[in-house]
Image 1: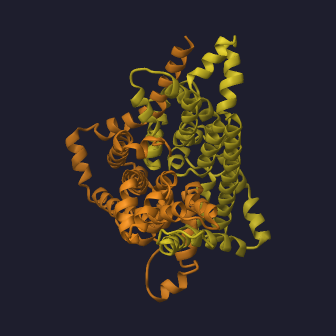
Image 2 (image 1 turned 30 degrees about the vertical axis):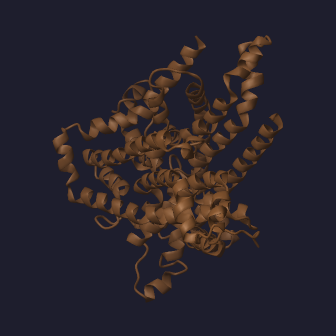
Image 3 (image 1 turned 180 degrees about the horizontal axis):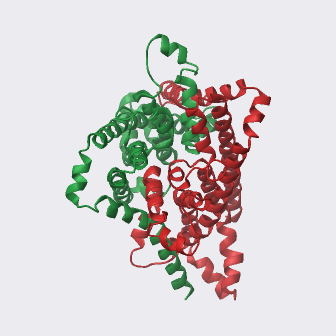
Length: 271
Length: 275
């Protein structure tokens, strides 16, 4: 009896709270037919926003994969003073509001910022331009790959690498042929989560981009612009693209947790 | 500095990590703090004690608390159902919990706004019984609750799974009632994780921006959150005020980070003692 009541409560609340927003986006975006949805997608503003969002992900995700690998390699394969502090620093962006990140970037690269005069003298535009979007996205997602790798590489220890090195393998060969194969699914897992966040980041990008129409409008920013223009169908069209990314992310995550082997099996649920 | 190891690449890996973190994370944060310290204590106080700032802080903290209380109950039930019950559609329910993490906040904000607007699916009936949601603090709480619910579920769920049903069966065979089992056996075991999950959710609510600004209406003094006020000050070129407000948000984030870590280390000791 208690069991049924609890289950019923949870299912009803979840349907209203977590499922209804998704259903609403599908219904609203496709309200005038699938044909019109695809026609809306080719609207130059939306098409540009999709392109810019993809470009941002293409730049930021690989960089954060490399950073994640370097960071995890540092803190799991070596013992050194300040290691705990370094781990805390790696995870720091996770706790900071994207708005704070955006505001902070302004005080580095803005005209009033630390490098402002220097950048102006060299005529390099960072703020309210594409570089700022990439940098802010890097800040927000810096921990995503490292977070997945650190606990895993901690458990795996250093025995295999030590054996490889002792048998004469170079550092690069050890990394490529011993370490990387052991963590490849965790890298993919982290990269997928990182990608979803980069494509969907709103707060930080909103501050640093200046929201210049047709120049710095990523998809999430384009949604806000369309919303303020009372172009609700357009806003939902752009939203449905990102819903697609989100659902694909969840699906890939489930597949990886199931087939990613022992690597992700242990605590693939972790966030 | 480090213990001798046969594995090469320490210098390169450490250098890359520190350089990247320094340039991408620490440099901006230092610049922010520097800017805020530039404006002086008196000016800082004037900015932070202004009625508009205070009311933004009050709305943000108040609604973050409300959202966290909701998520404490709903998230705990959700975690319990997922960890303990078998039912058709369980995988789907488990996947749905990831939606707030995977869905961009702007999309969530837009969808919630449309749902709770006066003519929306939920907004219309709620408005009819005299509960307006969009453009009210309640809307802010709903948006915050949506984006932060997975924190509670995903922190508590593994602990309930680890607890195992045998503990309950043992208590029952020793004559404990359902309520006694819940109060004396289950709750103490999951309490630290539950608290950690709530504090993570609360921290997320405090910094939430995208989901909230769509539904809030953003009326100064009524439905304006701290994050938005920082943003507005920037757009007014009032960089000092923006820096001051952002530093307050940063301080709140650090406080919550420390609180969460304390809870987690308490939790680890707690688990350790049980072994």
